[in-house]
Length: 303
Image (spheres, rainbow, N blue to C red):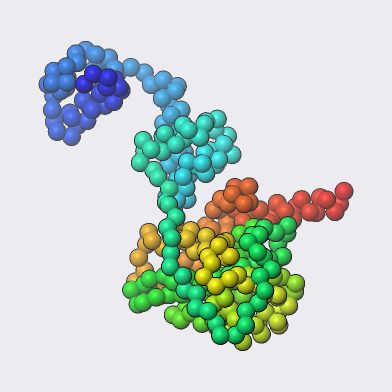
């Protein structure tokens, strides 16, 4: 037992007594430590440092659990700092490892894109996934979710400024009706007037369909499309699909499409848009980022 941490050794002796009814005297003898040392360690007063460490561990657990078990040490550390803690990111990483808390890693996924027969639109984004204000550039994509009844397809619309999910629609078929529904929801979220927005997507048949073209034209939205077979040309939508799968879908099972639809919608509205931290947003949620932008814009106008 040479080199063993005294606290860990004493805790081990106590656990043997509690779990296996091994007398402290026997446990100390087997481990080669004096019984008086063990009782001295057990009865010593708790130090302020130990209290703080326990409180920090509790705070880390709460943040990790509130994130759905998805945040790694950098995001947990950032939220601790915002809550007033003075701690290094390395300490947080070490404590999370000791507590067995690890964030989820992104996995690659297969695509649903099936090139349409109609001519595609020009690429106005060219992998520049930034925007200076809301409703300049949106992007969209489709992904599939497994349920006990079969596949459920999800179509999304994301604002590149804040990464806020403005519109989504889910159904048993991936068709033009689904992407049109997601676009209409995005427009409704923004109050109906979205004229001038650029909508970027891949060249899937749903997005080059006549129905989707008409929907964009009616709203005054300009379509933009990346190249065939290049996930990097629609990287933000691809990244959202991966986050959804890794942080939520892969950790749950859905008996029916209705169950999946309700639970995913809840995750989007109650966590992703309102609480999940995004590096692009200065580690704020999409909605908080938009609120701050509006407040700053109002101050600039008033100055």
